[in-house]
Every structure is written in C-alpha cells, then in structure tokens.
Image 1 (cartoon, helix red, strand yellow):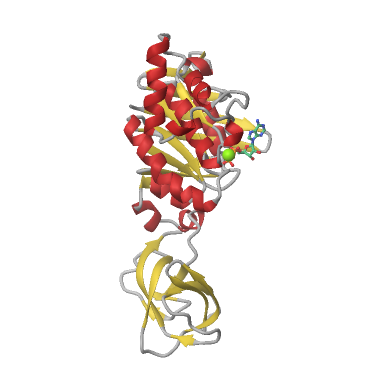
Image 2 (cartoon, protein in one colour):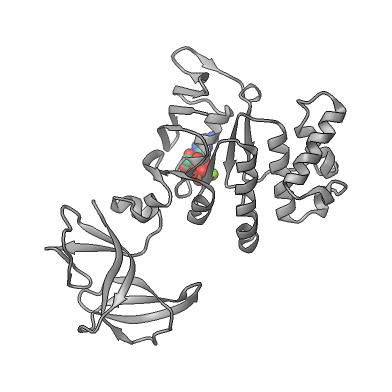
Length: 328
Ligand code: ADP
Ligand code: MG
C-alpha cells in the first residue's frame, strides 16, 4: 500500500498545504481543532477537490490538477468513517452490514461475509437488533463492519470515537486496533487524542495551521518532539527555558544542552538540595497525584507527578529525571 498526497486548497480564511506519503499500517493525523485534518481526509476521499496537486493510491492517480484528473468518490474505493457516522435506523444490524457487502452479488456468499464480519467484531448476537437498540460502542462496531465489508483499498477515520464516553473509548480502542489489523488494511486516522494516536497508529503526522509540522514514529515523536512548537501541539506541560546552560526555572546545571533553548521534562526527581519549588495545588490522577508546582526562582509554573500527595505550600527540591531537548 502506498498513498501519496501533495495538495493545496485555499478557503476563505484558511489555506491547506500538505504533502506526505503513507506506507502500510495505520498512521495518524494529529493536530488541534481547525488545523485542516478533516479537510485533508475529504480531499483524499474525493468529497472536495484541491485547487492544485496530486493524490495517488497504489500507483492509481486519484487526483491530478495538471492532467485534470479527479476520480469520483464512489470510484476511489476508499472507506470513510465519519465523526458522526449513521446507521440506517429502519434496518436491522444484519441489513446494515449487508448493504456494506453489496459488492458481493451472490446472496449466500454475502450472508457468509456478513456473518464472518460479525464474528470478527463480536456483534453476532446483535444481528437482529435495530440501531436504536444498540449502545454507542455497539453501533460504532457495526459502522466499522459496514465499512470493512465494502472491501475498501484504504481506510479513512475521522475522530471515530469522539461520540463515545471516555470509559468506552478505552475499551473500544484496542478492539478497533485488532479489527483493523486483522483486516490487513492500511489507513489514516484523524484524532486530537494523543492516547488514541499512540494506541492505534505507528506513524504520526503532526498538523497545525493547514501544514504538516512534523512526522515520526510513535511513541518516539511524542517523547522527543524536537521543537518547542511540536511539544506544545502535543500538549506537553513542562517546557522549561534554558539560560547559560541552566534550566532557568530550577536553576540547576544542565550538561550538553547544545543549541537547545528549551528542555521538555517528562519526569522529575526529588533531591536533598535546597528547595527550588513550592506546591500550589494537587489532584489525584492514575499515577498518584499531579501537583501544580511553582519555581521559587522565577515563578514559572509546571506539573509534577508524585505517588504521595504533597500538601499545598510544601517546598521541594527537584531536578529533571527524564527529559529531551527542544529547539525553538
Ligand atoms: P479540523 O482539523 O478540526 O478537522 P477542518 O479541516 O475541518 O479542521 O477545517 C480547517 C479549517 O478550514 C477551519 O478553519 C474551517 O473553518 C475551514 N473549512 C473547512 N471546510 C470548509 C469549507 N467547506 N468552507 C470554508 N471553510 C472551511
Ligand atoms: Mg475535523
């Protein structure tokens, strides 16, 4: 599988200019709201045409402005799962799935395909139900099944879990990863959840303001984003300034900072040295307590995870434990 995208599209107040290529597996397009993620997917699906550029899947040209080629969406053989996917409300699950499998003309074979897909998705017990009788997670699996049954060459997912609540997402994500893997298909997943990106994809494209800011393999690019801007787009909290080889907020010596102006701290270590931070507040989280900390040296605030809660006002001495350097 190889998808090549190199396109430009100008809209009032927004301009999209992206160039990337995808190999086998699921990649994610990660970026803040309004950065051009859905727009990119829609151009790949053929729902909107770029102003100029080129899109090709497995050597087949889908769009080429120079040669005036634009293959219509239904002929691109690309599966597209929307943010707000819809099942046909008056049809049972089996019928909904069967419509996806309509490429198979032989009725018996189609029924078998639907049954196999239902097994793969663990929804065999739901075939006789109507969409309104399903939970959000079940409906979601049916929608994925319907899409896979249409045997697309490539899959597009636009925030497919955004309608589900958090606890359900955590259950559905690994299942989704398994289903897609077993289907052997490649695809592009749009998300603004870093957990989703890490769970479901190997390669990530970071998009911001209509441009690809950075790409890399996960989880490396997340822990080592390279630039301050990329670190901020990932939502990292502890981006601290380096001045004269020292981390300004902690006034602790940092070796080999090189050209880096910033340090991205993933975890801190407490020492016996003189206190350099004070606890402002704390909240329980999955690893104990997340503390809001303020530097006693320059009043920068950042976050610190600690198994035991430290009372507000506690003074601590911190040095970075795991970290990476960032350029401007
Ligand atoms: P997101 O990354 O949240 O999916 P979109 O790709 O939907 O962002 O949108 C990117 C930008 O393009 C937004 O500013 C949006 O308002 C604008 N936009 C998207 N579709 C259209 C359209 N059909 N007409 C005009 N502007 C659009
Ligand atoms: Mg969107």
